[in-house]
Amino acid sequence: MKRTSRLRLVRVAMVTVVALLGAVLVPSLGSAPSASAATDGRMVYPASGNIQSKVGDGCRSNYRAHDGIDISGQGGTPILAAYDGIVRTRAFGSGYGNYVDIEHPGGYVTRYAHMAAPGTVAPGARVVRGQQIGVVGKTGATTALHLHFEVWRNGAVYTRINDGFTCLSNVARGTAIPLTFPGLGALPYAAVLSADYTGNRKADLLGIAADSDLHHFGGTGTGRFGSASIITSAWGTRKHLTHTDFNGDGVGDILVARNDGVLEFYAGRAGGGFGGLSTAGTGWYTMLLVTSGADYTGDGRQDVLGVSPAGMLSIYRGNGAGGFTAPTVTVGGGWQEFRHLVGGDFDDDGIGDLMAVDSAGTLFFYPGVVNKFGARRSLGGGWGAFTALTGGVDYNGDGFVDLIARTAAGELYLYPGTGSGTLGARTLIGTGWSGYLELE
Image 1: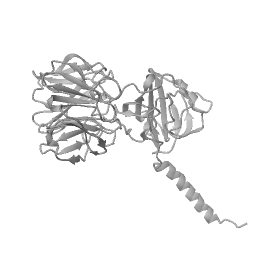
Image 2 (image 1 turned 180 degrees about the vertical axis):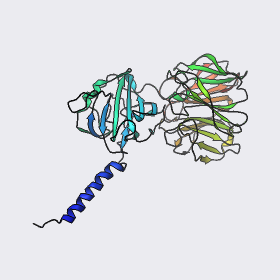
Image 3 (image 1 turned 30 degrees about the vertical axis):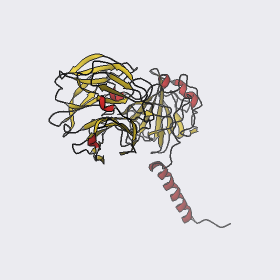
Image 4 (image 1 turned 135 degrees about the vertical axis):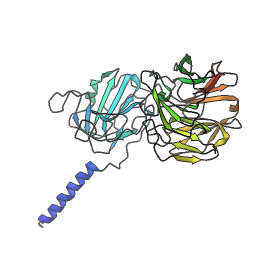
């Protein structure tokens, strides 16, 4: 038999080492399994790798004070949502590092920690089972590349998750966890966070009254609102009142343009109310139209759309921290013909869309594509009779984002979204709203 030289063996060893290092250091180019909405109550493994620890179990016949499952894996490989849900938190902590919390039906919450970077889906957005939400890393209190995966139910660690994992075994992301989750089924509500100012998962309404007071109307989750409460006064000279979760904390914020052009940002507080004023930019008072409440660039952060006095529509990219990041994306001109513009994910695909009413009173739907919009579709005429139009969030609790329109006589109508870029039959939800300078 031919003898292999020592030099060749060294070369083979070096190639093997380089390959192994590359597997750890280079992000995986493999795609995650296709995502799809789920109703069967079955979670999937969120990452591929070896099970190194479980809840209270170090996987080596030792107890460990630990609330989740550790799945070792290559850095940069995909992390998937275990089930359909709403992204409630995208944050950084000294222990968890970059982490994301997703709320699911049946009182379940899943946490994905030690991500290499902040999650790719904005708080308030809907995700489906198998959708990528980040990549494996080792941020926070850890020295090894892995995903820390927790499951909670009704505020307590769901220890039964251990039954779906075997210590020191390998799992493949996107395959079903062999465990039944009681009460986990279809998602009963859609994202409302960019207009939820009280933390009760119901979309609210804001209005600038004729006397310049800023009013808050608490949503009921059924498409109606409670009585007005005054937030602050002297807002009569402001315009372009806009709801958004502009800092990515899962709480509704306010943007509004001051008459000197400054764009004011008021961060919502988790327990209700707003923080102090900060400024996000200048030159906004002369904008023809402004809207927000969705991600238009595909980076997981809510953006702001503005139409300049010349009719140019631009995407001002949110940085997820209450400000903007360059570059601004120019969509195109000719938008001076529109009198109303409302942003939101009206076709339920994860990218922000537009509902726009032109000068002839025709409502158009513009499906969002990353950094631009697809061919528009007409949804009908007669919309010129409305003096205010807002929405892009779920007011009636059916899981799809809606529109709210006001007539000159002060009638308030709810147009329920269908999740396909169309609207259902309208419902009269109130009267006496004619005295408001703006509704949002």
